[in-house]
Amino acid sequence: MLLLTEIAGIIPITNEIEAAIRDKFVKCDYMKSECLHEAGKVAKDLYFIEKGLVRMFYHNDAGKDITYGYYTEGDFITVPDSFFTQVPSKYHMEMMEDGTLYAITLSDFNQILIDYPVMQRLENKTLRTFLLKAGERITALQFQSAQERYDTLMDNQPSIIRRVPLGTIASYLGITQETLSRIRGRK
Image (cartoon, rainbow, N blue to C red; front, side, top):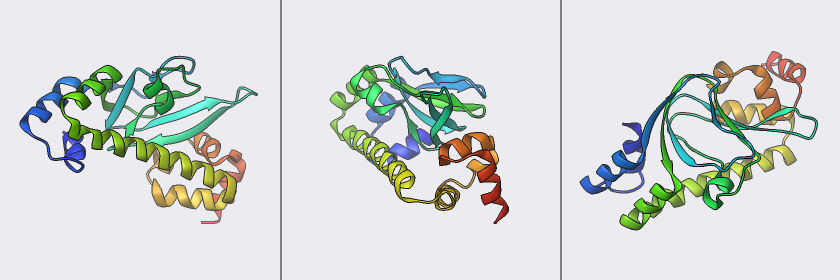
């Protein structure tokens, strides 16, 4: 179970903690294009991706679909501001391929934190990862050229180019699909 391996890299897992993780994280199989979360609703679950790829996106004022990020095997994913504060989200999350995820509700997550305070290290790492990814996203859009954003994506998540449609990659990079084709043609 990749989830246990990931958590064991953060904290020592006792038999009691393993039992709690197995009890509270529910295994879910999803199909490609299946919606994990809809904008306008409260994010009810924190997911761990065992297998598959999830895209987080929103619709801008013109109704255009804009990709915020991609999440793959070994990643925790939710809409953090919605999940942790229980307010409606502006983001959608969808499966980009068939996958297996483990889901935990906020109340179950909080109960694990109460029962096993060492698990707060998992919460801290998860929040830190969300924060750093958000910071990287803002920095990329403000300070990098389209070519640099593409290069960064290829350095950090090279499998994305083979796993998702180019239109979603272009929207993630903040460019048109034609510009993306030109950038890829230079390689």
